[in-house]
Amino acid sequence: MTIATPPSPATLPLRSLLLAAAFGLADVALASGSAAATQSSPGGAATRFVRDPVRFEANQAKLVAATRSRSPAMADALDRSFRQDILGAVSAELRRVGLDTSDVADMTAAYWVMAWEAANGIIGETTDPALVDGARRQIAGKMAKSTAALRDAEKQDIADAMLLQALVIDARMKAVAGQGAAARRKMSDAIHAEAAQILRTDLRRTTLTPAGFAPASGSPPATQAPAAPPPVTPPGRAASHAGNWQRVEGVYFKSYTSFGVGGMMIQDFEPVVLFRDGSYYEVEGPALEDVDLAASRAANPRAWGTWRRQGATFLLTDDRGRTEDYRLQQGSFFKAYPAEAIGGKLARPYKRISGGGNSALGGTMAIAAQTNLAFSPDGSFSTDSSAGAVGANVAASSRRRGGVGRYRIERHTISFVDPRGATRREFFALGSEGATPRVDSDMIFIGDRVFVKDD
Image (cartoon, rainbow, N blue to C red):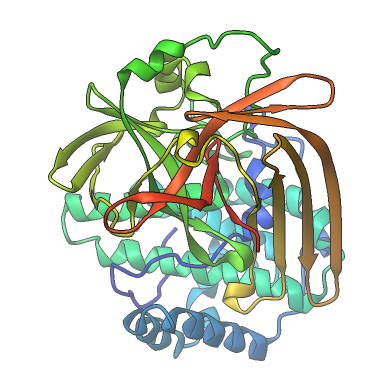
C-alpha cells in the first residue's frame, strides 16, 4: 500500500508505539494458526469516532515535539511533512482500500498492513483491497470490546498514532526505493525488527489473506506465545544438562531497545552466554543446566549467534548475519558475575517495571506493571506485583501478593521453593560497573529479565 506523502530521511525511526500490545492485538488470530475467519464483521460503532481536525493537528505537533527531544533533524523532517493536509493527501488511497480515517480499527489495520509490506520488502506496489479488508475485519473483531468504552477523543488519539506511524514507514521505504537492494533490505530489516518488538509477531512468517493475517505455509505460529514457566524441579533432582557449563567461555549482559511505559523506547538488558566454540546464547529463562542447547537453537534461532573478540571489543553476529560490535564496560556490553561474588546471599528488595500505552505520542493511555522481589539473607523471599492503567476517563489498578518462599543462589542459578516444596530454577547473574569490571549487586538478572534495587 503506497501513500502519497513527502519522504522523510531514511534514518527516521519508529520511536513510540505499543498501542497494538496495549489493546491486546498481539494475538490477532495468529496463535491459533489460522486467520480470524469467524470475525467477519467490523467493529461498528465500537471502533468508530467523530474526527476532530484540530485534535489531529495537535497530535501531529505532539509527535514532532516528542521526537525533537531525541533528534531535532528527525523532528524537522516530520514537521515539514505535516505542513500539508495529511488527511487530504492520503484519503484517496485509504478509500481505495476501504479504510476510514474515523475508525480506530481501520487505522490500526493500516499500520499492520504497512509494516507487513515493509518487513517483506514490498515498496510501491498496489495493495489488493480484499487483503486490507481481511486485516481490517480481523483487527476490528479484536479491538471492538476494548475500545467500546473509550471517548471519541481517545479513539482518535490511537487512530492518529497508528496512521502517522504507518505514514512514517511508507516514507522510510520510499526514501530507499532507488538506493539499491542493500539499502532496501537494511530498511526492511529495521522495520521488521521494530514491528516484531511492538506486535510480538514475526511479519516475515505471516501471510496476508482475504481472511486476515495468518502464519505463512510451513511456518510455526507467528505470534510469540506467553513464555512457558521455567522447569519445576523437585528438591534433590539433578540438572538434566549440567555439562553445558563445561562449554562456557563467559557470561555477560548486553543492552537492547524495548518499549516501556507510555510507548517510549527504553534501554533494557539481557544476559548472554558465550561458548568456547564461538557461539552465543541469549538466555531465555531457565537455568543453563536445564536447557537442551540443541533443541533451543532449533526452536528459537533468534536467541543464537556467533561471537569473536578483538581486544576489549566483542563482535556478535546474529542468526541473520548482522554483526554488532560491543566494547566491554562501555555502555552496551558488561561482564556478569555469579552468586559467589556476593557470598551466595541477597539482602534487599528489587523491582522490574514494564508497560505500554500511547502517552509518548501525546495520547491519553498509559499502562504500567511492576514486579517486586524482596530477598533476606536467611534464605527467604517474598514477591508481589501490581498493574495499572490510566486514561482520560479511566483509571484502574490491581495488586497481587505472591507469598513467601525460600531461595538459593549458586553460580548462575537461582532456585525458588514455594511453601509446597516445589522448586523452580532460573538463570541468575549479578551486574557489574566500572571500566575495570566489579560486581554491582544493585542489578540482578533472573531468567531473561533484569531487576534493579528498590530504594
